[in-house]
Length: 385
Image 1 (tube, rainbow, N blue to C red):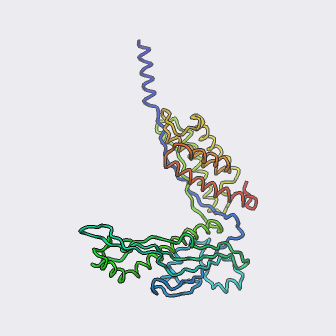
Image 2 (image 1 turned 135 degrees about the horizontal axis):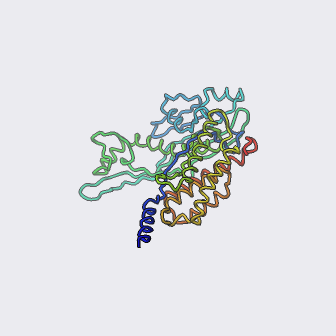
Image 3 (image 1 turned 30 degrees about the vertical axis):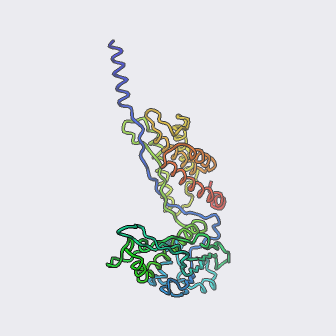
């Protein structure tokens, strides 16, 4: 009886002191150079030529301007704000375009035309029929934009020739979608009569149209410039790789902690290499060996559960296993196993997993595509292993 009781005490104690797997995020921060697929088309400077057609009933006059743009001019400042500047790596030229061409200085020339805003449709609507009506004007509007980018100076190659003609219509409501101030005659939710609404439009409509036109321009240019920079320009990137360790208060998950620590320390050394002028990233034999060790730790852990990350197993919950899966796919990407990383991502995107994990997998796919394209295009030239 005493033996049975003793075994019960030992078993109970072992269960009570068993540690539950509990993840802890570790942010591995590092700098590196992001190389485009065609490095030879990259340039450090950009120049902008703008043709802004008269718009908003003449509130914006016709104007032609070129780099170097003066930031104090409100329209120049607006367009410069849309550019995807990269400090020392991609910035506005301080010389005139004609001089850049004469000196054969490499640069990217953006030629931009923004046309007059046009009302496609207009409807008066009472949002609140009854004793307290709220009349609004509902518009469908467009501002045609044409953008061309050419690598010039030492060569003449058109890199981008695009416009927003196929998706330029936007919906706006007056006065709701306009910032008009706080004057007594401004009623943000609508006016009690059509007459008052139209009077307000005559007074404030030009101001609203200026705001809406700039919104349409910005929502086309910002992502277009951002995508262009990521595709064609060499620049410095400060990145954070989030991997997961274990809180490990009572032991039992030392291998998970050690792998996360190794991964983090490796990226700290990669960052130190970058600051010292070394550009081998994580492609050196030493770093690849370390990252492969981390990969094997996470792979073995997942193998213990047959890579089933959607079910709870005792002390290890599905959420924790999904964190280890993200670690594993990170390691696949950073050890250049791109096909296997894509296979894992595609497989688990079809499974029942947490919404956050699903979003992380899609983010990892973008990361995988970025590094795979970069590696395949530049490994031989850069001497990456």
